[in-house]
Each structure stands twice: as structure tokens, then as C-alpha cells.
Image 1 (cartoon, helix red, strand yellow):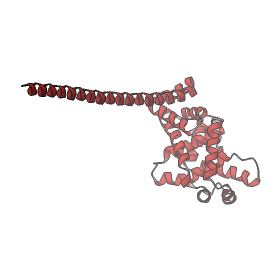
Image 2 (cartoon, rainbow, N blue to C red):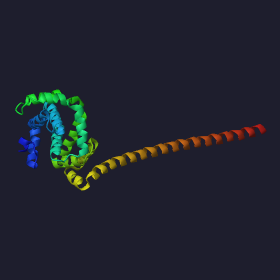
Image 3 (tube, one colour):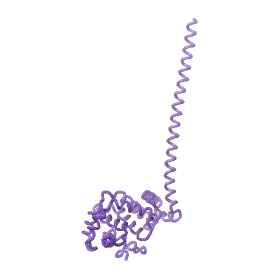
Image 4 (cartoon, rainbow, N blue to C red):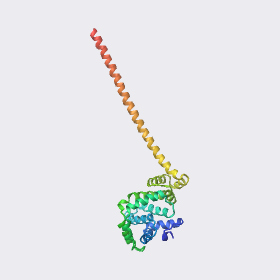
Length: 255
């Protein structure tokens, strides 16, 4: 049912939804459904609509690179699932929506998608390619790639939990770093610490930067102290040498 309807009500439905997206069907299903509402002037989830069209536009690239773009493709599907199940934070949803406004030509998309059927994948992909400016999708691809990394390292539920608490792409990237380090323990950490897990990651980064800065400052201070000591020592040696020469000259003059 997840494959057919795109509504992931349980883990099996989630697997079906993700599988459908990876093989284009899911993106075509969502794009045609939301596109039909768009054409009819009904209420549309533009985030799902836009992500589906971006997914159609980049899926061909994923296959062309023999799966090199698969983490981003999978992350995009998980972002759609998070939106459908209410597990995408409002702040992150707003950021994605703003990004989609720059990537998708909505007027052209409305015109291109109007006559497309779910049984016509080639036409759907062509319609998405015409309306989606893939060259502007770099930020969105990085975001979905980070989501895919969390899924690969810590599991789908951890990725959904990360999207629920993260409020910006930078925070999603921090969750991806946490997942790369902690693996299967990531979800438990996110459950217990919540946004504190991201804050701790930022704090650890800031602490590292502070320590590095302190070490550089200490090194500069020691270097300056060493140079000052050397200059002072040279002045003292030169003064003593000059005094000895003056005394020797005085003694010589008496003789």
C-alpha cells in the first residue's frame, strides 16, 4: 500500500514508499497527484510536489552514475516521508520550501504536468526536467545527501527523528556527522538528548575551535617572549662587551 498510495503508515509502508521513489514510480505518483490538484486550483502541498519533481529530474542522473547519487536520492524520499507523517520540523520545511521556489518554475511546471499520466514515466521526467533548474539544486542535494547518510549509518527512523528536531541544513549535517560516528546508537542519542544532541555537537566543535585558537595564541605569545628574551640578551651582551672595550681602552691610555 505504501508503494501504491505513497502513505507510509508503518515500516512496511515506509519501505514501499521509498522503493517506489527509487524506481521513479513514487515521484511520478506524487507529482501527478499534487499536479492535478495544482491544475484544478485545489490545495497543494508544494513541498511534496516540488521534491517529487526534483526527484524525477535527478533520478536519471542517479542511474547514469551507477548509484553514485543514491544517498541524495534516498534522502529526498525520506524527506517526503517526514513531510507526509508530520515529522519534518516547521523551520526545516520552510527552508526547503524557499529553496524549491528558486529551483522550480511553478508556472511552467503547471503547464507541463497537466497532461501527464502516472503510466507515462518518460513524459513525467521530461516535464520535471523542463521545469526544474537542476543547476540550482546543489544546496538541496547536499541536504538530502546528509539525510541519506543518516539513514545508511543509523537507520530510517533515526533519519526521520533527525528531520524532526533539525531546524536548518547545517543541523542536518551535524546529525549526519553524529550518525557517522555513533552508528546505530544515533537514534537513542536523539531520543534522549533531542536538540541537545545537535547543541552538544556544535558545542564540541566550538570548544575545539576555542582550544585551537588558545593554542595558537599561546604559541604566538611564547614565540614573542622568546624573541624578546633573545633581543634583551643580545643587548646585555653587547653592553657588557662595549664596557669591557671601554675599560681596556682606558687602561691602555694610562700606560
